[in-house]
Image 1: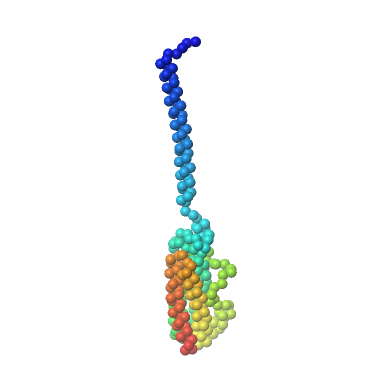
Image 2 (image 1 turned 90 degrees about the vertical axis):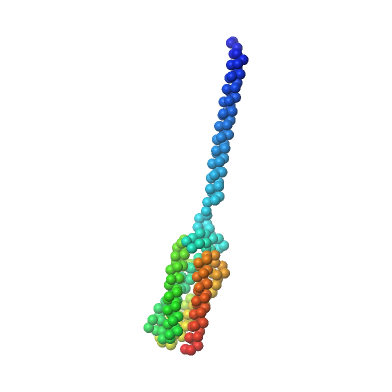
Length: 217
């Protein structure tokens, strides 16, 4: 058997060592890149924003919307105040051809001027928040008139209408103020709380005017 020269043996040994080192570096490089890829995915998942449905799942949670952060109290305020305002507008419409007192007519004009735009604003909020306009069953609204109350109001004219309207609208406004104060206390949305403050201010003043009207009728 032929014996290789010592120089050739050393050369082969060096080449083998280089090859082994290259293979080791390649293996480490694969592991490193794999770890970097996994790490990037985890970071993206951790920083991904929660969906609006997840964010709004609890009473104290808040989610981004067209009007800013909101919570369940804001949603309930809008859902309940919309039909509450709508009934006030129905009561105001009945005054046409029935009301006699100038003070009552003034209140009617104020209700129509303020509450229809507020209804449209609250509907827009609910749409932006991805929430239904209706609160569904089981949610009582303070101050809402019964069907019989509305029939009695529609059947009256002149001073009788003025008196019934004032009495019913006082109770109706008191219910709205109660709901608005609850929103001021528990809501999170700045615009909704601002509207609640306006409801408290305007309707408290109208309650005082309506009581003055009752005193003179």
